[in-house]
Image (cartoon, rainbow, N blue to C red; front, side):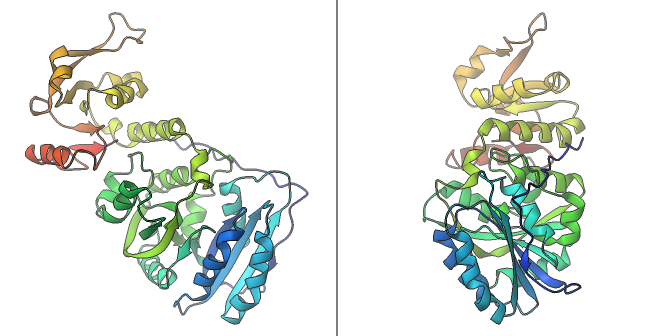
Length: 370
């Protein structure tokens, strides 16, 4: 089932875009940049756009989501230099009292642009020299895919596990690990796609603050039969800071979307399965499932002898009588398929060794839902 997209109507404060190509002057690539109070990062961001080695035609499309700093002035100050380099610049925005959110700003930046391909760029990140060129080549080969790349995280050492996951999961795992708490396996700040694919999948949800518009779009792209590919080269400096909009999205919001998508894509295809982790996360997943899928859980499995010795997990909050009791087994006594509710990269390789010992194939015999 495809959830309805929330779209905002524009208010009187909206202004028409300025700049850009003349009518009929489509370009190869539009760099799509939503902007909100980003002035301290913009010089570095725009300098990097200026220095791209891509030889096709480019434009920069900026939508200012009611910034209260001098972000707009900074971008205007770069307009002449970018246009001398052959990068046309289109800028618009609104000046209402509150920002309308990243989804809204992205949609506006796309709608005022004219590129055949879209390179999404956050105003606080920095693209490396070859980003547009290499992702353009990949997108031409994969027109129905979201194209990503490897990243360098700044400050160094922040979100170390997440960064390693972004850069190191295999092409197959881009499809199998989409249910984890890390979110999209091709991360939004690295996205590049054809305009036609955006128009088929989008627009972005415009619910505003607290809405994971990237995850919703990512799932919708997969529902439409879209693929994913990553250019295995570091093409973006991905900045971590406390003001990033991702911090406004609650874990519970993400959890519900993930559970729903797991049920839709995986559990609907299985007659029964085992939840790997009889602890807090495994039990939470069980309680979050639909009644139909709860009945498919044949067991929990674990390595913790204390949990195993209890023999059963009783779902105390159930309205069923008698209350459902699910066996708790040692993982060697359990049977596939599994939903793994143990955090990746946190067991010193023990989880991976245990999975390998059972000769299981990811994406067939198990999925991670850490």
